[in-house]
Image 1 (cartoon, rainbow, N blue to C red):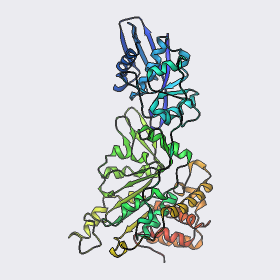
Image 2 (cartoon, rainbow, N blue to C red):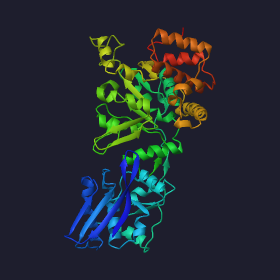
Image 3 (cartoon, rainbow, N blue to C red):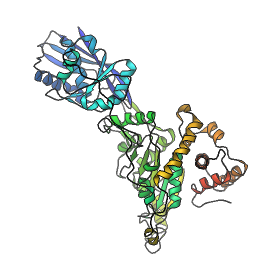
Image 4 (cartoon, rainbow, N blue to C red):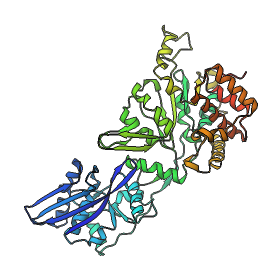
Length: 504
């Protein structure tokens, strides 16, 4: 007789159902696991055997075969321990077979039978709900999985608790969801003195999810401005929070099962590898671009990143998803993020200060920023020069707007965009609009179109640059509460696109 249990194998954010088949047959004593397992799954036999021994359950002197079906799907991770033990307990007639077939299980086993939390409980719970099954997981993963309200989640501390629950001796209560946190911003925009143009660019970028680049001398406030961006962004909606948390669940970043409504803010170091930024590695884990999904990816010292790393950003920026190709699998992750980059104008950093600039000016500036290719630079909607702040301004009291005031305007602009798109085709903000839809929602009036045509011809804007100017202008109009895109909106959008403002 073959007993069955169910678990999942992860391919990106997708949890694919895996049937765990267990057969105890006559023959030389052996315990084998087949079905394309990796090293962690193969080692499960020793953890399962020792955990059962700690419960005074001795394995029979027979041949035990565990098959993970479908056999052509790679099985990776320690979360297969619990479903293998679950199926084996049914094969030994300790648990009813119909019970194990109605449950999706995942969890790692300690040698004493304690269940260790694993990553991916949230997407596993969603897969269980789609199959009409309940989820069995370690206690430490229960609060996370319980966010999927369509599936009953049983979170046990030990394998013994699992046996007692499903035999009716000591039933366990279903797990409850973890705490929803918003995470108040630690930084306020009011603390930034001066830099009014950079603050305006930050507000426009937040309102329409536009990509933004700061260029300025060291200490001018580029990182300080970027750190205050989370404080003006609206909180994640419920679908966004669940989608983002699924990615963070696979990366093991959910804190005690709680789901955060704060938008992700990722700031990798410039020495990060391509696998760290884009995703990959042995198990094709999500990278920083996916961990920043629905949030912000801040890349300080932008030209210092490896050229190959920077160039791989071009496709995710355009498509909002990244495909990690491996010999045995292709894994897709969503990555709709707002890219904020900061860079010095040259290697020494003082290109505009003759007293402190190096002897290679202006060649050092061209060489340094030349590390950023033209096609990648073309993808930044807003480019802002951040000049040094005068010492006299630093002594003045803070008089600018607080993050709360700016956040209110950003939220109002986002609400306008949500109503405009009405959730069609997953569109949320102006940065998502393309083609005919962009022309429909952001058609400039006569004067604005004349200015845009003049600028496009004079500065030879690419087709991408042309449309990005229109998107930014649409966002500026939303911030002004205007239904039409006017000349002033186009002029301001152009001023953030070109090296020097052009209003003529």
